[in-house]
Length: 275
Image 1 (cartoon, rainbow, N blue to C red):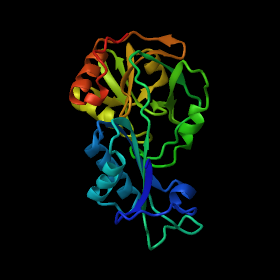
Image 2: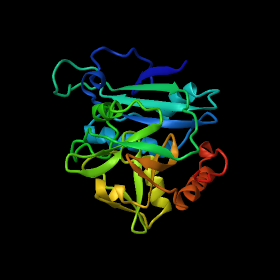
Image 3: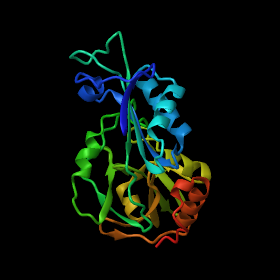
Image 4: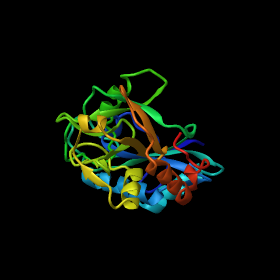
């Protein structure tokens, strides 16, 4: 078994063709790295899922019910990626929320991506992120902006693309948060109007109290001394090229990668050198 659909009571259900998650993107999701049958950063992922559901006013599931369903799926799964989708459930045509909400939880297990030890190349995306404070920070199901952005390149040497919002502020990569070393300080874009409050991003900010959130322009990123991206599946990846600009690997980056590997063995693939 690699997937299942359950209701809030933990009873397995069929996925309906009129599910509002499918029709309107009415829901939230989490993508979680699995290591030795255990979901990495489970508490942080669960808290973000619940925050997103509360903002969308979707009835929230009981953690124990979802955790037990995940554990059944993860038996004998040494390494992989667990995806949890919470939708509002079935509803008729139209945007109005039905009075009798019956949320669905879709859980699936996927192969883990191959590890990356080298610094990566990024692309500047033309697709912009809409500024919508009501949806900023949460991982809602509508990812069409990221779909459009990811289809801008086919070059296998490009790992991800960096996106700006409609006001010209750099926000994130299509599937990761970004940090830049600027004038001796590590800065990450504010995500109060667009973007996702990444789990790895939050970990970095806890590790580096001196790191700050800031509105960053494309020019500031292009002139940065060094860049890295991070997410909860890949961990921390140094950036060696963004568009036409090449960046050195700052000594802080391999140090932070090794620190992460020590507290989260799922990311331990030998000592990082930043090469």
